[in-house]
Image (cartoon, rainbow, N blue to C red; front, top):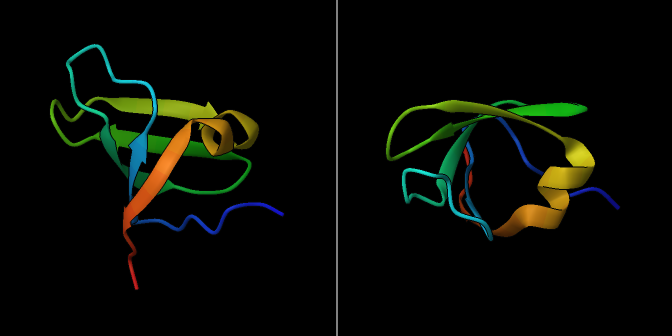
Length: 63
């Protein structure tokens, strides 16, 4: 069953971004996700299967 990740959620990933941050804001959700690093504001595109493997925890829900 897929994770319930929505636009506006803040997620922590297992692998760090090259800038050193590992928290990202979800900017687009669907089959592909657009994530924005909270440290350097760089945007990263990840397909759903890769994102679901890399998510450590959902820090904040958009609800």
